[in-house]
Image 1 (cartoon, rainbow, N blue to C red):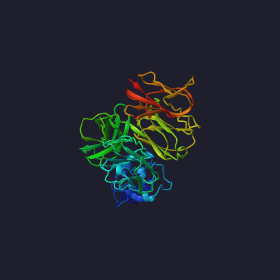
Image 2: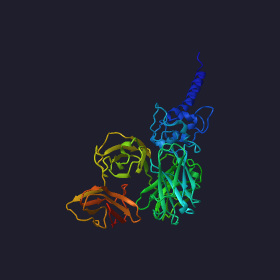
Image 3: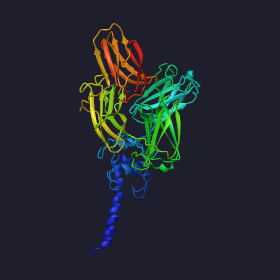
Image 4: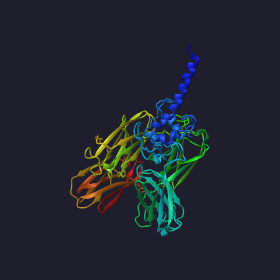
Length: 553
């Protein structure tokens, strides 16, 4: 006679054993998961594999990236999971596992170089190498401030900066431990020649840009002082010092900086798991003399989405009159503010080699309202693999991402196949959204709206002339007329009163004639500009003229 009690004991014991064994099976669902084995997701090796405490990466997967919550769920490795930085070491999960865009799928060969694989859940483990700038001949700047920042060509984002308060000698080294194998970088730096403590374009200060491409490890870059100056358009950093955040330890925190007038976002960051009550976040991108709002929230509800207070705790703090790097101190308080958080759409581009050196434009549009969420313009595609990110999407909405490469090089959009253009459709159900795109020939006419209309007029002028815009003051759009006595490469640009470039209206070869250009009052990102005085400049060969106009709402 069968012992029913013993049967059930044996059955559940076997089931429990199989569940335990199922956990380590997840390492095969993560790129290069078998290199670190269970420690990819677990803080320590445990007697029962896959049953030890989880590190930050393992916690992220368990709570957000399983097909089914619990022991039976499989890992959803994708572009979004790859883009996040679970352990806060400044390197994404994908970079640490040698699949930066999250393109690998189960069954494919392991991606990347196994020697470079690190633990995405351990802050002390990262694949970063050191770039060393070797300065010589800096005698003209001994005793002066030197500032350096490192920009990733693939993202356009700052990945590191260093300051030398007083240049010690003509020859010295500065190291930044922030580079990744296979990436390319711009190195921007300036010496504060006029010693006013802030950046001024050359020749007031001496500034340079160097490039290093496809790094293979620790890299030395020699630099000898020269007069080949470059306006590096320096931006400053904002450091937010958080204290007393005890109620939110272990929770997600997101923070962004927004220019007060235009509401243009200049940068954002996120802390996946607040590790301790006192910490800091740094966001570069603020500009001298500008006013900003710093908006942030802690995910008290634990759903990894923003909810208006009191479900989540959110705050808005001003930073006015930026005069260099800024510090903002914040101690946890109950004076919450609904900051109306929106999310980030990221598209990872691969194998865009046919378009290196070409103009690239990208925008995100809400399908239902046909309203543009935001746009990005690259004057030139500089690397074949790069990332475009646009804030402004909201859960529950459908969007399209339209983009083109200016294949014929005339500076404006032309329908395919003259230019190469594509459309990607996506929905937001999870907050931030990330997708991958690989170059293909499935072109789409995206009917790109420029907000700029160039209209040739009758006439054969004898001289150059830039006319006053009409109407002036204007709202929301205005017309700018100019005339050319001969064919020239023409560039018409709009600046604010501080000299910051707002929009390039024309940059192309034009024949002799009279032209009208319509400007819709938006910047290069599609954002409506605030009321104020703006400057427009026409350059045609050696001819240059500047006029002012007033946007009045």
